[in-house]
Amino acid sequence: MGVTVDVAYKSLNKFNEVLCGDKVELLHTEDSNIMILADGMGSGVKANILATMTSKILGTMFLNGATLEECVETIVETLPVCQVRQVAYSTFSILQVFHNGDAYLVEFDNPGCIFIRDGSLVPIPHSMRVIRDKKINEYRFRVKKGDALILLSDGTIHAGVGQLLNFGWLWEDVAAYAVKQYRLTISAVRLANALCRACDELYQYRPGDDTTVAVMRIIDSKPVHLMTGPPKDPEDDVCMVKDFLSGDDTTKRIICGGTSANIVSRTMDKKLTVSLDYYDPDLPPVAYIDGIELVTEGVLTLNRVLKLLKRYIKNESVTEEFFLELDKPNGASMVAKMIIEDCTELKLYVGKAINSAYQNPGLPFDLGIRQNLVEQLKHAVEEMGKTVTVAYY
Image (cartoon, rainbow, N blue to C red):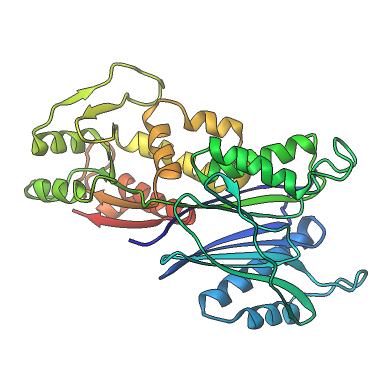
C-alpha cells in the first residue's frame, strides 16, 4: 500500500461578500491525489468566477495528462483580462502527491507552501520557470508519513494589515503558528480550521480579503467498514458479517442498526450490551460488541450523520460549534467524527431486507429510506476526497 493522504480546506469570505473569491479542487487519479487552490483577482462574484474557472481548467487538464505549459497557456488564453489593471485572472497553487511518495508542487503568485516534517519547517527551494511571461515555481520532492503540506491564499498573510499588525501576518509567522498547531491537531480539517480561525481573529472577524488554508497530511491508510440493515435473505447473514469483519488490524468497524447488531453479535458469538446513557433525547444510545468500534441505532442515526457531513462539506458551516457538535458522545456525532477525521476509505455493507417499521413493504427497496441514506452518504464522503465502495446483500 502506497502513500495515503488526509485532505481538508477552510475558507473565509471577505467581509460582506456572499461568494468566496478562492476555490479549492480536490481530485483523485489512479495513482495520485491532487489539491488545487485558485485565488481570483478582487473579491465577490467576479473573483469567484475567475477562481472557479482556473481551478476547473487546471483540474480537468491535469486529470487528462496535460503538461504545466499547456495548463498555463490555456488559462492565459481563456480567462478575461482586467481592463483597468491589464492583468488576468487568478493566482494558483497545485499540489500532486503520488501513491509511490513522489510529490509535485506548482505555485504562481500565491504565498509559498508550508511544508512540515518531523515537527519542523522544511524549506522549499525556488526553481523558477517562465511560461507565457508568468514566473512559476515548480518543485519535485518525496513525501513520507507524518508530513503536512499547507497551501495558502494571500488573505492569510494580509490578516491584520493596518489593524492589529502593521504589515499583516508574515509568512514566517503563519508557518511558525502552523508548526505549533500541527503538534496539537490530529487531522487535516482541525489544522486548516485552526489556521483560519487565527486569521479571522487578526481580521477582528471582518476579513479584508478572501482567506483559504488547504491542508494535505500524509498518513497511514485508515479503512472504515460500516454495516447497516439485515440482508434480504437470512441465509446471507454469515456471509455479510464475514465480509464486514474482513480487513486488518487498522480497519475500524461501525454497525448502524439494531437488527444488524444482533446479527453480528449472534454470528460472532459475542455479547451485545446497550448503554444506559442517553446523551441526546432524539437518538437512541449506543451499544457495545467486543471487537467492534461503534454500534448505534440505524436510520435516525444515519440521518443525523448525513446532516453533519453535509455541514462539513458546506465549508462556511465548519465553525467552532461544528467541532463541539462533532465531539459529543452521541452515536451520530461519533460516526461522523470517525468518517471525517479517522477514515481514508469507507466500505459500506448494506442489507436489502425491508424494515416494516420504516416504510410501506409495497415499495421497492430502491425507494427505501435506508437505500436513499446510503446513496447520499456515499456521495457526501466522496465529495470529501475519500474513496467509497458499497456492497449490497
